[in-house]
Amino acid sequence: MKDDTEDRSAEMPIKDAPEDTQERADAPEGTHERDGDERSSNQSHMRFDESPGRFLASRGQAQFAGSSGMLFEQAMAQTRMAICLTDPNQHDNPIVFANRAFRELTGYEEDEIVGRNCRFLQGKRTDREQVQAMRQAIESEEVAIVELLNYRKDGSAFWNALHLGPIYNDAGELIYFFGSQWDVTDVKSARAGEEHARVLARELSHRMKNMFAVISGIVTVSGRMHEIEGEAAEINSRIQALGRAYETTLDDAASGSIELGPAIRAILEPYRAAGMAISIEGNGARVPFGSVSVIGLVLHEFAANAEQHGAWSSPEGRVTVDWCIVEGGEKARLEWRESGGPTVDEARISPGVGTAIMDRIVRSATGKIERVWKPHGLEAVVEVTI
Image 1 (cartoon, rainbow, N blue to C red):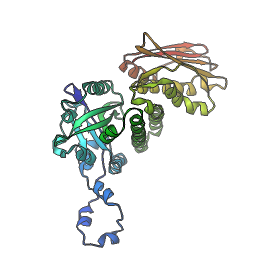
Image 2: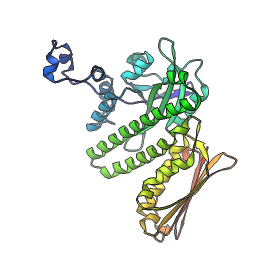
Image 3: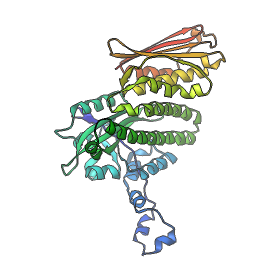
Image 4: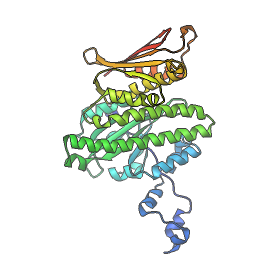
């Protein structure tokens, strides 16, 4: 979501009601029991939201075909989160989908939302620094969480904890931005300082897990449908690595920066638990919250390669990970060193998908990555601007 500057906000869908739902709604009193419909009134309310079906029918089938589309609709039917999707491939990154909760939160009807950039929710008291942080996250295709003062159609203000992130297709192309909005006005008013941060972190942690679970489910179903389960499993491993990294850092997120060590340990813990030899060094360096996605994915790719081809493919193999802040606090430096693995022949090494992913995301963070293939294993240095 871009602001005047171009904010982009995004989200996800809700399930269409079956064709017979209108008949059920109009049925005489008592017929619902014969139908066995014992759903709560709130669930029924969500089922009658037709916006996900309209979205899929108009433009979503290519991305959410078959079971993926059903999963998308069901996920939207079961969430009370305000959600929207924007299309960064159209001029001004307009909203292309907004669920019922989004419409109820903002007071706008669907035809007043779709086709507009999310900046229409901003006003004179909206913090421009938060808007700028959101814009930067969109430009670099990163996951971000910001708090904005937004305005409803009736002019009333509310504090919006906005969680946004990119969505890619099977070819790795950016197709949407996902945005979820949480009205934290009461939290903002009732609690301050550390207490507010803890409440927000718990809620964001819950929402983060839900979001990663939905994305992982879509990837799994799509992989099964297209008979590419192996590729889907690789993508899901990256999603899960990011999920572990973010989950450990949310308590710190409200301060604007997080301690890097816990995130690194969370990403590498599955390998340690599987018996891989790891030496984790480094100090209590802190980095901006948005840096977690870059560092997390880089570490995951290094670890996956070490397990398949590098040090951890040998019983005696070991990996050492170190990190620090350099250049007067402007960059985070990560060092990855392998030893005890199979002998490396650099001439036979060819870049793979993992290498391409690492190079791309490090460049997006205006950083650099250097790899040196020594006989005893890979030694790499990654620097990310913070």
